[in-house]
Length: 616
Image 1 (cartoon, rainbow, N blue to C red):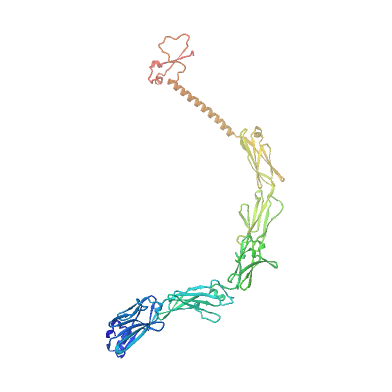
Image 2 (image 1 turned 90 degrees about the horizontal axis):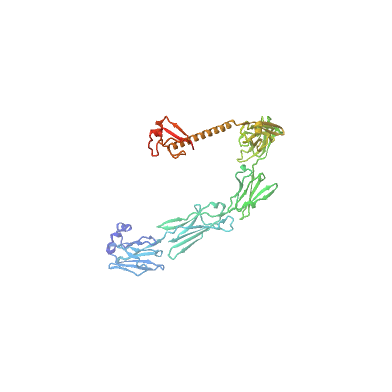
């Protein structure tokens, strides 16, 4: 051992075996691991364990590596006096531990070589051993690229399926191929997997592989992947690529032609789409045809290009028939045909029969019968002109007909099995008869010289003529069998006396009614009442006005035509004057009323007499 003794740090597993089990050995023993594996960029540590009999000391320890020329190049020379490091490519990356183990930092693929430890022990001779340094770099996950152009099952050459590449690995890996999880193996003239290995400037390897294999129709569902295999710490490891599908070209084996919506539900006026589908890849070229008698009429120009879709708009009964889709595979020029029958449901020939068909008179009865033709079952329903349902079934029975019965009836024909398929037919039932006046404006209360409207309403068929016995401005309004006439006239004495006659006639007869005009007594009374009220109001106004004048006079506001009152102390009046004396017995009342302009009460003597000068 070093210095005659082995440091405690060197007593590892194999060293323990030497000390415990091989103590009786009589020669120099050197032990080193056969292989040391280290990842690129890490530090490699290589141990050198030795045993010298009788605990003798070593003379020297030398470390070497073997170059490509199989020549030993010394790295270290260790003696008891010191350690000498040789000038090599490893300088600045080497170190020596206390147990004389060799450490190499930042290992590279070029460091993958043999390293030797040599120990000199004087009389016990020289011993040596070696370790193989293995440098590894885990490869990248492989990238797979499937054939981008697609592969035909009829390819005359073995086609390329995919390429696989894995980079930056050491030592060189290898690639295998798999289909649907099962490994593929090379088969002569069938399956080949050539690989290329490239050593990069970094010392790492890039490996690529290409898979060539024939394909079938079933391979449209197959998934391919590649696996890169490498060794690590004595074990085989693997990395898988993603699985890919390859675009396989194959001719169609089956063709399907369908009607959208379902052919059983198509009705006249619908838009129908014929869809042709093939199970080939790529889709073949589609052509459409319609059978007319014994010939096929091409409809391809109406189809959507390269889609296998034919759209038929507003289909009719004539659209019924057999349609054909034909596919053409451009790879092997094979053709497939498929037919489908298009059934366009329809209702036609809707007609209504009226029994009896002769002219109908009031009190008669009539039966309306509705019929139509269709390839599906029909249901009938009768409605009036307002849309009200009258009866289910194809017959409508009307009895005891009147003018009011005259109407338009509608027969609605429906196909329950085809929603939306329906048609309607209208029929008019006209009941003939002589006119019947149903309303007149009589009696009519009027006033002399008033302008009034005389009204006469009748019902009849054929349409009647309305005549008036007096002149005026007439306006007629006709609604089916109903007619109304309004006559505008001015009320005269003769009109009040004789009234007016409304005469309605058609070819079946005449109807007349008299309109009586009466003086509106209520209106006359109301007029007299208005005059009386006016007179009363006028009297009241005069009375109020007189009271106001009297009051103002008493206040002295009105002088009544004289300059002022006469002084009672004046001499007797002249003979040519006539004076009328008016005495008042109500002195006390007038005393309160007669006041001066300043509001003072006058003396009773001044209030006892009044004199009115009548000369003027």
